[in-house]
Length: 161
Image 1 (tube, rainbow, N blue to C red):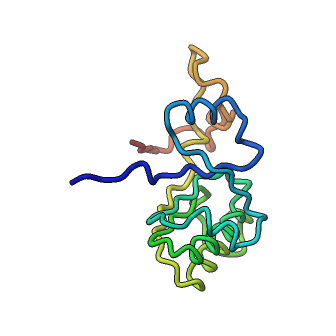
Image 2 (tube, rainbow, N blue to C red):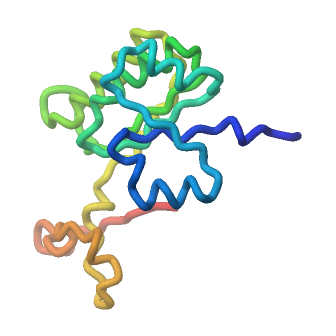
């Protein structure tokens, strides 16, 4: 079966358009489209027209930016919306602000009747990786991995692909 991957778009914030990493992707043939969540929904929807799926791959601090993104996706008749779902595994409301924001996004998507798939991956193990002696991961090391709670004798397991 032949698929048209040329129809794929990589929406980036206006401030990211000129970053070296964005230019590198563009040089490899990735279709880069500036996208500002603060634009009117109709303008944003024009950039999503013809897309079957919209995947929100954003930072944790931009979690609430998915609300206008989802609205634009609905106006553009996107068939499936996949929100970013990083965050702690806690009850849905009233304990952790980030979890509250995730629920606000999901509730907005539901109110729109926008088809969606939520892949709630959590974040515990990403923040608990120990520092490697080689220093290879120091740029991403959070420091949390060096502080194991309790006496260190509680079994724990991590999975990832």
